[in-house]
Length: 230
Image 1 (tube, rainbow, N blue to C red):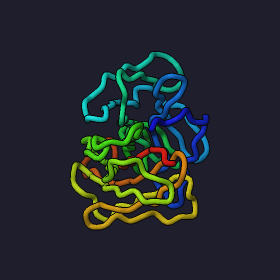
Image 2: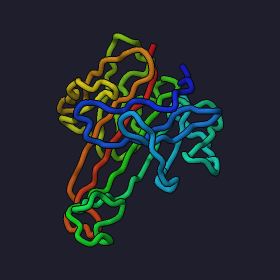
Image 3: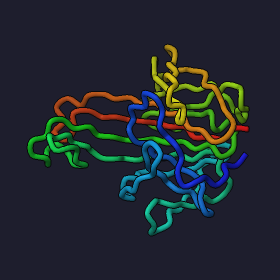
């Protein structure tokens, strides 16, 4: 199953979705495009924030990824038939002040109140296979536990990993389900997520303190899984 080209904007908001912005990879105009946004709108970003963009085939073998220069969003082509694309997006440090937030380390902001380093990790399933169920080594990731394409009306078993280990009690939100409470993972980081027809994204977040760090007080990570079901 291949993801079709999407509309310009994909609704990401979900109730309790505290991971204010998301970054993901989608198909568009013959290439793969890295998108960044919040709520019902896309936002521009500095291309340098895309730290890694990778792809594997149905056997789990790495595929060459070539970035294309120019444009408002990072675009790339993949040699071969990708089953899964992964993204690492570093949104930098956001420092809170009495006049709002600045995308700078707190050491560079006079009167800084607090600062958070925000990072995003994305997965886009293109073709379901056993390779999709294998952890990809992202610091925070949602791992599907079923190799077959999920069907609308069924459930998708997933596991949330942090530094390669199960994240017990992780709260997973379904984008576009604004009044729905997040799904809480069990002690092994596992949860069953309802599947609806069409394109969908599930998101999880995790935050931890950075004691003694001169640039930021905490690190906030968000990971998403994007796929399509029929």
